[in-house]
Image 1: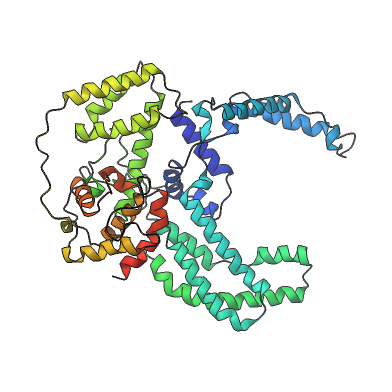
Image 2: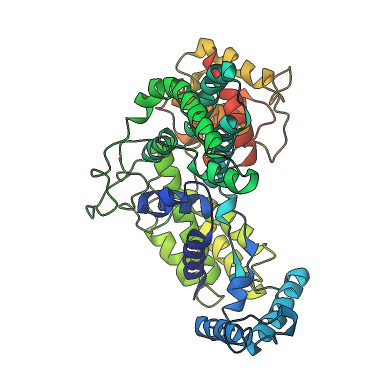
Length: 481
């Protein structure tokens, strides 16, 4: 399998065997699985021993080994043999040797990149669902651990507000509605069953806990019912059914969030259904689209050797809908990062081919005399220029501050996505002039915030750590203005 096929295989394997809260909701929907996959593709690469072992041991061999091991663990009748007395099978011996070999290669940094994969558990979506489940577990156990009904109303309603706050962080409307419905339908049958085994609950105690939970849930439902209208916006399942084979054009040709070109690469995913309703959240849809396009390009780039790299790059250069100069800037960033990766193991020839190709294309570009010094003031970024200072002050008062008291950017080159979070919130609130191009917006940002030095591609970095860390805090401050 090539790298693209390995990525598909690894995602399917992760989806099948990973356990995470609400996994039945995600796994049973192609739509939700696609959302998770877009985040999975951004997760860090990790060495995966199962990818290594499957190269040498087939599924049939594993099955035969299990059956052989089972038969060895039994004597006449069905009584098991003590574990230390059971001899390992030939496949088990071979797998242990391969495991030692695998970990040695990891330590030596000599493991081939095709044995690297990603973990669903490291995606923001699964992280959010785990956080939600932790809060739900505390809520369900409250009726078990607390018998004083005087505190139930205040706790139940406060807990409900907290749960709704977490659910609201789910960006997809239908997923939000499905998860919210499961919260509305929750009970404590499983928790009581565990308590029966651990604490030997009597029937009277079981009934008392069930009654307390009903009371607690009733108080919480007062808040849930008020919030239901927020989740009832999700279109009916039959309208956005995964079985619907009608093509859905998410982004019409020529449209791009932040005025990017339609796409940098020629791969056509116009009809890839990222969300059920093409009118919902165009920002999220476009970013998922760009993630998939960049990933497809990167896989093809990695798979190419020094003999066919030029042909691949020429093909994409010829077919790109973007301007040639923008395409070269974008490819140079991706290509250099890939070739410098310790996992790529790129040959010197491949590096040379890429360098020569870039130089040839750069020289072939016509002289660009169209770049003009930006004359508009920094406040022209906003629809209400008079509010500019108030918006900038948010960056100074957030904890920790993003700007110094003098207005200079202070977080360093690896945390610029904090400013992207601020920009995103203002954009969603309708404060940014949408007629400005991406290049103009970044120029205005750099003029307005000394020492920032951000490029237009960075405006799509919504998955970075600083973006996530600052987003909610900035949103609260901006909403107070």
